[in-house]
Length: 153
Figure (cartoon, rainbow, N blue to C red):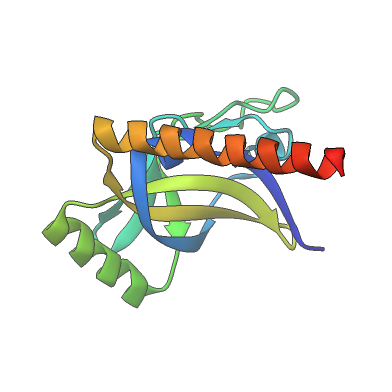
């Protein structure tokens, strides 16, 4: 069946140095799954935190399902992430000691189950962001030049 990416957090890749990535499950209500399948999810300004030995996703907006009824979900609620206890403890210690943050990088379906890819991140400074943009432009220029050379042959 494979993976089907629903949404990516491109802003996180621009604003943070991503040091490590984790795949987690997410505990959802029924109408939330339907909204995610329809692409009605936003990762802007969202993050994950360890609270009481559990991992929670905060700030993710999942729009209410249009065909839902009075049992529709709250769009901004905290959602529990599913991960092994020892991984949660290790991540919690890293975040507390070194000033990292957990940012959702993408939401996708893998074999019919909703998954969240989290990144253990450290914020970039403005100069780092400029260097990243400069490098991306240089790579594009090189690709264009190579493409032109191939056409001329």
